Image (cartoon, rainbow, N blue to C red; front, side):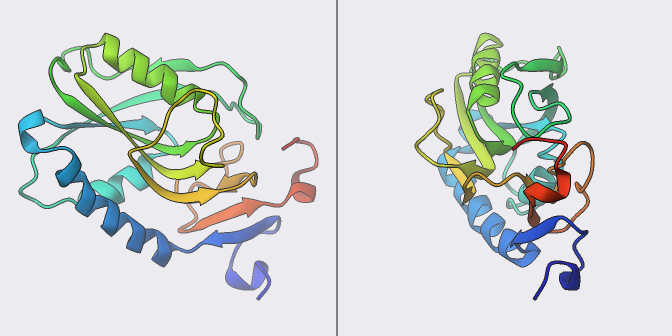
Length: 194
């Protein structure tokens, strides 16, 4: 069935449905308490803006008895294009009163691509005192190929080279609201290189 018939805007091809995402999130949520026991005083740190929907749905699936704090930070490496700028900017840090010393951080991001952003953030959070950092991503691009050495502890789905939008991920601020994940079709946005 063509993408337009499935309700996607022109220039997008379906990749992963909302139902597939929800099934995977349930499995990931079951794994979190086993990998980060409550005695490690877990705190989920969500990378805005791309991970907000993923993190909200994932964290709501955790058992209500699992004691985890939640904080947010915001950084940028893509700007309005489809390629990483190669530079990470921390636009908003977690609140200064949050003490990470001796705690395990569940760092939640939308995608592990080059690893540049997650390497920057893991180094930053270690400097803030985190004892251990567990990386959790919705998407892992070309697993085994990032030069940063970052390996996710939890990953939802592998993806190849396609530029992915929907479920919180955007292209120039568009498509975050889509319930599933879709690939940006190259010719539809010929002004931007992939």
